[in-house]
View 1 (cartoon, rainbow, N blue to C red):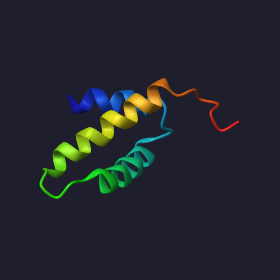
View 2: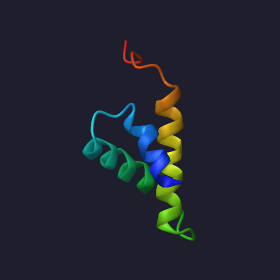
View 3: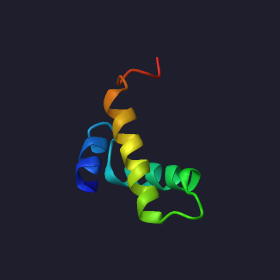
View 4: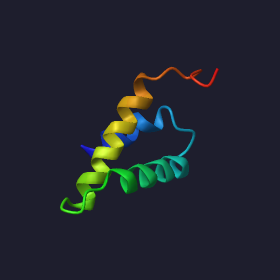
Length: 61
């Protein structure tokens, strides 16, 4: 469910505005012309929540 994906992603992203920006950029890159935009956004959120959920917080060091 999308709300669970948003909740997981918010655990690592500083705020909702930043999460929206990241999701929009990811959806733009992942979108395939024959698919629904909603599916692409859900896929982008799933990728973000998985990557951000398992990535260490100090990955920039």
